[in-house]
Each structure stands twice: as C-alpha cells, then as structure tokens.
Length: 225
Image (cartoon, rainbow, N blue to C red):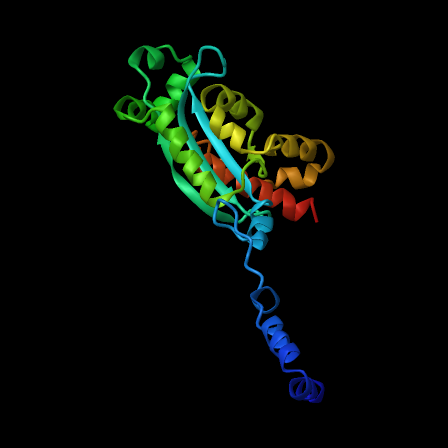
C-alpha cells in the first residue's frame, strides 16, 4: 500500500491508470461456468459420460426384415448401476395381421403378459416413441458418450438401428451385454453363477431391464471386486 500512496502523490495520471487496471472486469470477475447444450456444466458432463442407457425391446420375433417392435423400455443408471432416471415404457401399435403373424412363442408369452392386447389398444407410433426417448436421453446423457446395455442387447440394437436410427445414433457405439458376462461367469466362476439372481421371465420391458441391472450388480459384487 505504501508504494501505491507514493505513486498517487507523485504521479496522479499513472495512479489513475493503476486504478482502472485494478477495476478491469477481465482481471477481477470470476470465470463463468462452461455450460453445454444439455444445460450441463463441465463437471456435470464428466459424471454424465459414465452413465449407462439400458433398453429392452419386445418384438414380434427375431427376424430383422419382417418382425416389428411392440414395446420399448428405457432406464438410465450411473456407473455404479444405481438407477437415476426412467421413463414409462412405450407400447407400439401394430395391426392385427402383424400380431396374428407372430410365431407360437411370441403369441403365448405376449398373450400371457397382456402385451398383445395392449399393442392392439395403443395409438403410439414408432416415430412418436423415438422422439420422446430422444428428449429423455437429452436430459440425462451427453450425445454419443454413453453405451447401450441390456441382456442380449446386440439383438435389440439391430432392431433399433433399423426402426429407431436417431435413438441409436445418440448413443455410443459400444454396448454392455449382460449375457456375455453371464456366459463367462458360467464358465469361469461356477459357484458364483449358481447363486446368481433368478429371473421372473415376465417378458415386459421395464421388469426385464431392472432384472438385468440386478444381475449385473450381482456380478459386480461377486466377481468384479
């Protein structure tokens, strides 16, 4: 402070310049937070990149060229498999000729679960479901950073690539397939595999996803220590 006082008494013009520099916003203001299009700060984005997007589809069969999606469910977890967001599943309308053409397995199981009748009554299209799912993803994960996950998820991804390409493009190209972990566990960790969680086999999207998450949580706790 003594130096500044001396400067002020001997060189008034230089002191005035000194005060202007000290008040300069570029030197005194705080650096603003960097916010991306999702409304996420940089630190939030770093956390969001580690999230996992879980999907389960119910279809009229497994033939990509002829079968259709009739239900899609989506849940988002953090890197530790804690659910942080979910959206009600979408039942996609299909005409009677599509439902009547399902194979025997699908007719029995989708009929028993109530999905077949729900599909008949639904007025939701693939396009509207995809738009809502994209809006959901945008709120919670950055574009092309988070992997798709589920049981035998490669099959779901093939249907998504054909019928919901925008949804697929929003995700990272890598996948987390719980079925692969299960098969390795069955071969290498037989005792742990015997105690893995049993599935209810409801064949409805939301329930199947949560069972897949629970299964991977078990492998994480018992094997990936």
